[in-house]
Image (cartoon, rainbow, N blue to C red; front, side):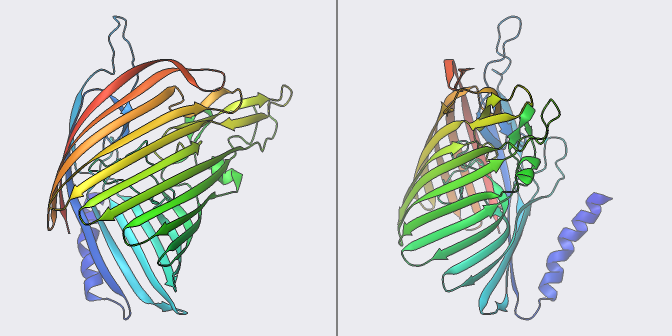
Length: 402
């Protein structure tokens, strides 16, 4: 019954908008139907039935010494088909107004019927200034992005995340300055017991803070950005005492992009501290514990990750992507590590793709090879005594865009 009601809503709502537009408003509907086929040579850390590939899993040996993760897989999915609408409205005190609502059918491995909100925000703009409130791409992600058929758009080397935010921007012909405050929604930070929860930032009472500055012209962009996050992993110790101890993380980023005619090159480098909620690696450890109260002090792990992307063409468009991530450990001795990939020393990846593009359609073929080095963290969280595993991924995707 619910599925039938949902189908009726999807069919009726666009018709209602088309017939009953309010004066001063305009609506532009858009979307895509996408089908993906992929092959992996081994098991991987991933989400959404493999739609978002991250990096290969480490070895898991059975009693005979055979690697349980050394098993290939093949899949097809359509979950990244989506619908959206862009709205422009009447001016508000001289400010231009607009809004966006977009959702897809991503679902998960147990319920593929889930509709997921991707973007939902309104925006005011005037004389180069703009204010945005709602959910959209995390501003640390969309400073510069890679161009890939793979839905991970370069993760874990690139950050991948949408968040509720209050975003301020000033832009002219040469300069772009952005300031933002973000909260967590669809993906939350990792906490004690490697459990994700939005409570850590809610109890902190400090949103994620972002600032960036870019210099740009018609063909080039170059800039830097900074991000600060303060989490409160616990409110009560194991001994029953109240605690307000925080783990603070400062993430720094530099980026650049050049595009002219059929050629594009983009690159980004990031030093992240505890940014594990953005489809990348990161975490923290306990640097001290009060023996009487159990109150902990925390120190974040540092992850360095960089990527470069080169593309050329229009109707036939191809290129390469290369990424590298290194676990730099903590600045102090730590125990009880929490996060993603705390036993990974480094990851390297190279991908090549070719796409065929005509109005309304896009077909793409991509090959990706990713190697991860696993080991044992030492007292500063740096991973030693490593071994490597490699995944080969072949992806074909077809998109009908409207």
